[in-house]
Length: 193
Image (cartoon, rainbow, N blue to C red; front, side, top):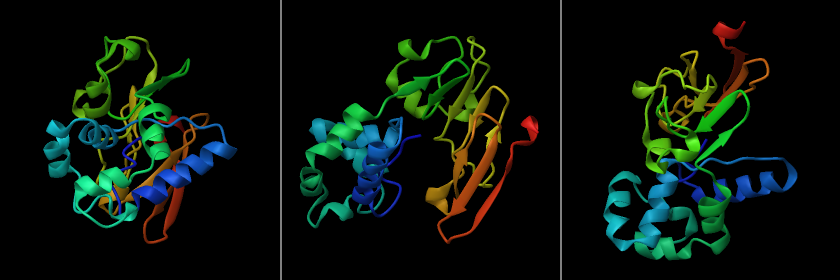
């Protein structure tokens, strides 16, 4: 669901693991706003200060030592290709629209501005005119529970803030969660029981 960078101490390991997963499984990766900010900082020096403000402390330490600008240069080409080419701004199926942030209810995702797809929050969530359910992240649910609004389901359960990492099966709405300290739990979204 995106935000593979800026959310933990081992960006390099996360991207390596996702790339490895894509070699053995059918995968679709979405680009989050933090991923896009890192790309923008690398490609456009004028956008570097914005990323510095929002990236957190020492976001690229897993790539090596040096200044943040030097660390950006240490990111291997295949990691840039993953973030810029492999990751998508959205993905659609007949029943669902997957985005990192969200989208306006009257706009087709192919016509939505990428910034909206990455930055929109649950505050703006509404039934999409297509009738499909929007599955998103970005709006961290600090209570650790999946936000199920019916028309929109947010699976960001705040792993970066000490909460849970969530996996949701959309055929039966069962979920599995794991915490950074090794706890796990599972269940089914109550609206779909």
